[in-house]
Image 1: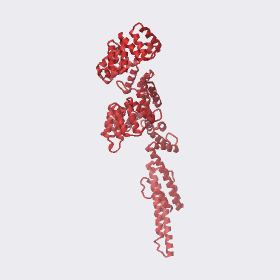
Image 2 (image 1 turned 135 degrees about the vertical axis):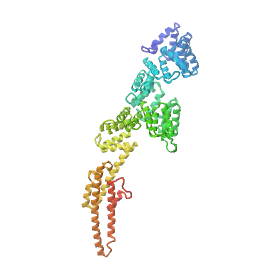
Image 3 (image 1 turned 180 degrees about the vertical axis):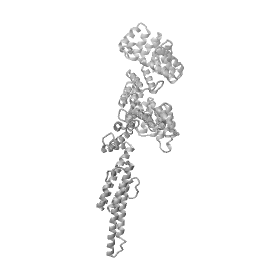
Image 4 (image 1 turned 90 degrees about the vertical axis):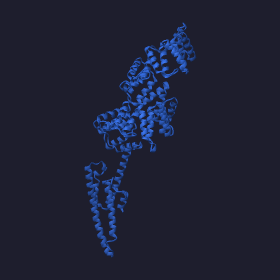
Length: 639
């Protein structure tokens, strides 16, 4: 058996078959049963299921306990569960630990017999006493769920620990899950990842999958989308796990460790959903919602989310709630969304808890209660939800539902950023920029913005543009600033669009100002040059909204002085025009009060109108009156 299974020595199938044959020749049941095992697994001989069953039956006739169990497993594979139950019962009666273990599984799963968790627990205990390490794992699950025995997570952890020490990969995975979920033990993502790695190194594909999730979500290890994708691929290749196919599909859907490709994601979700994966049903809903690999169809998306939720996916309830929240008009029902988030949260989903906290903080579908919202943020954060951790940081930074604590806020933002989410990295950069719980460090802020920007975060790209615009943390570079804002604006960032609009307006205002000044200067060269020199001082080159109150007042004074000089010149010229008009009228015998004097007044009004527009442009841009546009004012001035 050691040569057959590689227990303590290298696996040698040919030697195992030879020894079993020699022993079986003496009529020993163990040797005959061993030959059945070799024929079943193709060890040292060509695989032949029918011959394996024949050898097991012969060994059982000789009273070999383990033969009953091995024969029962053959009938389980053949879907003859009642026959398998009878054989496991015979093996258990003869004291076979595997017989007791598989009989316990029959009672627990209701296979070939009516489900009876109490009998299952008793048999798992008997098998464990006989040294069956797998029975320790199953018994631990009973204690964790309170199924057939009083619920006791602490006892479950002890059993998983014993199984792990016996190098049972199932025990390592179960114990790692306890550390990840804080079930019966303090949460420790690093310990969980370490246990998953041990089991993965031992060749358990389930552990490979769990380790991939750790790398994807930065739980106990440094985030690596590429590593996660590689591990999912390995789990699918080695064991064809449905869950691995689902995770790979999500990678293609969201561009995790691979280019985003809905054309690959949709068929993979379809394949996994047919094999019973509830998370694959969620994936199909996501594809229909976003139009990935298939035409967008919100109705079908909701149907898929509903099927996934009914199949037991906690996150699917949150997906359904999001569809309700994002609906418009009469279709939107915030109270329904709240109840769906609550359902998801009650099932232990981190997204559901975070979204439920958001509902309480914002008063979505429920009376606003920030303190309660913060409690749910804490629950989601404890589960490792980076967005919940970041939301908590905002609450502590602003004193929302908790006592204001800038240092605590910084710690939370830093913790979230370490999980590799670009949005959280950007938020940490804002902390360094504003000095939230840490000394102001513009260079560090710019570095964090750059890191998040490289990961495609629009807000970080916009903030990096601001850094280059103002020269904070980086060398001032207007071209780079505009480039970053343009990229962020194309990604839908409203702040970047606003910054670009401000730049365009400032450029247009400067152009209009120059045009108006040039026009007035042509009409009144001597005196207006003095007022023009005032308006070209550095004080007038910055947007008025960015000046301090003192500088704004100074700018008003200079503006008034410039226009007083201009209008004084205009009035002086007007008086001369009137005198000249009167002399010409008398010489021609006309009424001097009519005609030229009237035209002079019209010209004066046009000049004043232009001056008023220029004053509004430079002085109170947001309060300027409508009517004649600046370009029209320039045209009037030129006339």
